[in-house]
Image 1 (cartoon, rainbow, N blue to C red):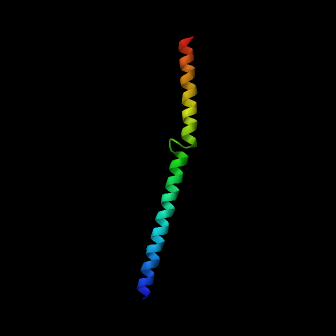
Image 2: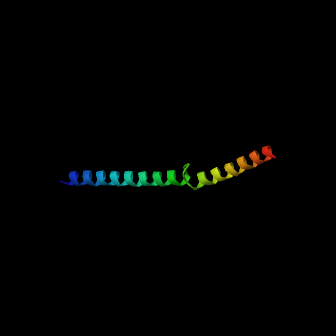
Image 3: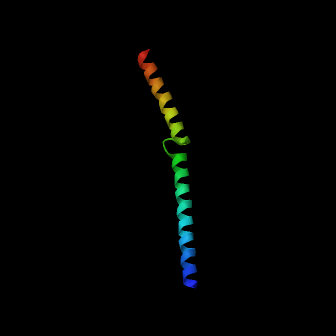
Length: 59
């Protein structure tokens, strides 16, 4: 009986840790991925740089 309870507790803890780690990984990907804040800042800076280069070439 005690072994069965330990097995169930271990299984539950592993499942809980897996769920938490997947959630943390998803949050990090959304935050620091291409669609995240850092990605948006990089896109904004590169688009301004690209616009400046195009304006200089046109004038």
